[in-house]
Length: 186
Image (cartoon, rainbow, N blue to C red; front, side):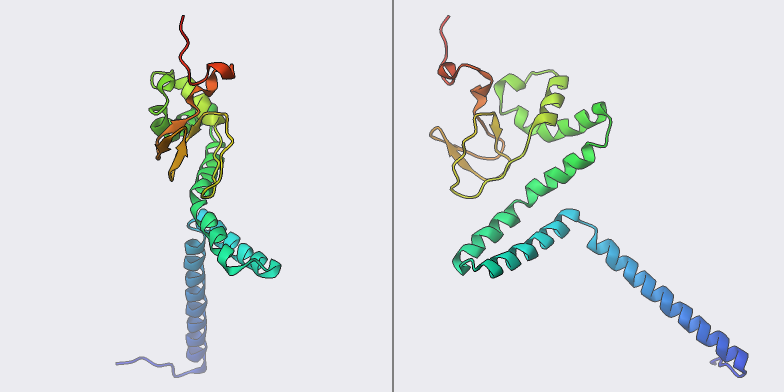
């Protein structure tokens, strides 16, 4: 059977146990919710930015037909935000470890650039550390003169369709504009 309190002291102990159990349960539920909400900082930042964007568009009277394109850009730029967070974490490492870590991010695009395929690892580490990420919306013109690598999406450049892993402005390492894209006879 059941054991039930009989004296006042037993009632008091029962009430204290129930109160302690309730507090422990509330703390456990709160901790789990906190862990779940902070599990993905990029997603949390995206949700915050989306809320701010929606409020700003509502207050400034942006047409409904244009609002979708702004939201799409924000949603698609999450990959860029992830890379920025990754670089922030990598910046806390020693130069050697940071270089090795960033080298993993550039392994895919070094195959796209012929003069980087057999480049020394230290050079690739230095290049990976100095690269910067950019994100563009649909149908936006690019005015880049530096070496560019496609991480996501597709684009057209010099009559070619480029997909993830492709590079363009490969000849940007050449200082003289006249010599770019044209082989020079010796």
